[in-house]
Amino acid sequence: MSNNVIDAKLLSKMFLAGAKNLEAKKEWINELNVFPVPDGDTGTNMTMTIMSAAKEVSGLGDSSDMTSICKAISSGSLRGARGNSGVILSQLLRGFTKVVKEHDEVNVEILSAAFDKAVETAYKAVMKPKEGTILTVAKGAAEKAHELAVEGTDDIEYFCSEVIKYADEVLAKTPDMLPVLKQAGVVDSGGQGLMQVLKGALDGYLGKEIDLSINEEAMTPGAKAGAAGKEVEEADIKFGYCTEFIVLLSKPLNIKQEIDFKSFLESIGDSIVMVADDEICKVHVHSNDPGLAIQRALMYGQLSNMKIDNMRMEHREKLFHENNDGSWAEIKTEINGAAELTPTYLPGDDIPLGDKVELDDTKEEEIPEMPHKEVGFVTVCAGDGLAEIFRGLGVDYVIEGGQTMNPSTADIMDAVEKVNADTVIVLPNNKNIILAANQAAIMAEDSDDGKKIVVVPSKTVPQGVTAIINYVPDVALEDNIAAMKEALSTVNTGEVTYAVRDTVIDDVQIKQGDYMGIGDSGILSVGAEIADVTYNMLDKMMNDDLELISVYYGDEVDEKDAENLKNKISEKYPQCDVELQYGGQPIYYYIVSAE
Image (cartoon, rainbow, N blue to C red; front, side, top):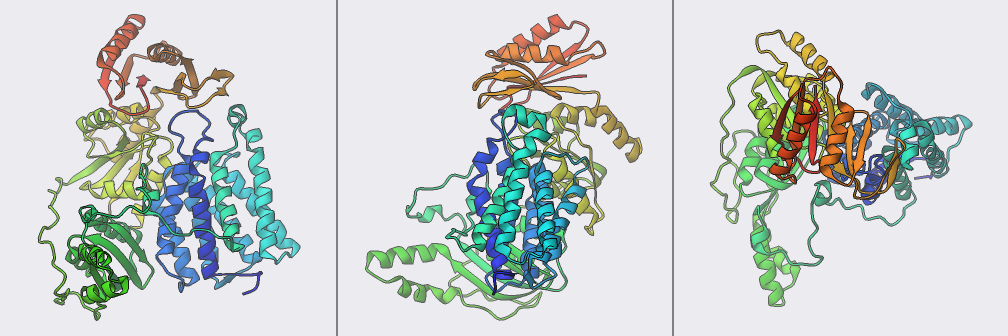
């Protein structure tokens, strides 16, 4: 292969290298968040999005063709998309792979066209594109790519280097496009994340030494690494059987079927790898009952290349022989009896699993199905108190998440699937979750179960509460949606948290450790006392037309302190009803609304 083309194997390596570079820089990117709050999450969202795709790509093997790799990148990032930055990244990858998948080898001309398609696809996914963001950086990269292609450049190393160099220049100018970036002294975090993907991909192309292994724990927020070299105790093996097989699909899986199958596998085990193209689906799962995975897979086609290992037996044998100077090769020979490849099986066949495999008779507990209804509700929030409030208002399913943990498109689809309704209204309650919710609604249109998703774009918890209060069961769905959306504009919201670094926003000096009151339009108050900051924030939210003030106190606030604040607010605004409720939300001491 010359240095003028990229084949499937090299594309896979470049993509994984880009994903790993982003993963390594995610905390640094998180710190570029404009507001110095303790939940900057752009790096985390982008990393979890791309690592979802990387997991699928890494499971394909070295012999995969361009189409399979592009499908894994596109579908993996789409299902794993979290937050605005993650959704936009998934759309950039989706557009890029639409062009690349049509070719066995990619040259500069094709790369340029792929960059253009990536930008076009991403801009279409955002209702109101804003310059000075990841979109601007991507557009700059595409413009430079087009310029180089027109000039006749055919050296890919030079092409990639020049594109990255120019995109870096565009990134450096983002503070001039968004004043809030300039005042905070940072470049756009999403744009920086994209740059790390591009730079990592170039390193992969150049053959730099990179660990391309995909760490499952890295894809899970808050996952903690164990001590290096520590032996795994048998008690730590939660799921005893490593099960692998290939499904020879009777027809291609649609996106909903892929999500459903993966969700089922996750419900019976862990270490899930599931990669599908139009003809086959490769499955790997650790579980206590391989039969459950096998039976579910038979719904989609014939089975082949089945392999089941008893991991607890392997562990015991390994320790026995290591303690008695036995070699690992001998151990593998002894315990492979239960892991032979099997013939192809048809749906309904009796499948022998081998004498050494003992299935757990414990079946998955059946969850009672909800009564069917025409309209159901899914909402997103963090805090047990807030979850109970929403359930009390008639929400069918609450996704635990929010600013510190944005649910993915797949998470939203999974929640919707659990609601037995013809139409499910989704309340994101966070501006950074709206795109993922919209993506779920688009995916629902392509499914064959007829269920419809409607997103009411609530940006805060109080907006979500007000929206569902304005739902009237006997009114037509279209009228209800219109009323709920209109109600969002009647709510002013403020949230109180603390600063994690020194900065200046809206000419307000903020020191690390200060408490901040953040309203719909920006920083409203800063100070050293939580109650004072909350009180002053509310004062700037108020006007003569407002009648109701709701205060939700978080998990770190004492109830007595919250009562004192409520009494102080009631004295200041006697014309308003003041409600105090336990929210239990992390990070934010108080969430306050006025309407």
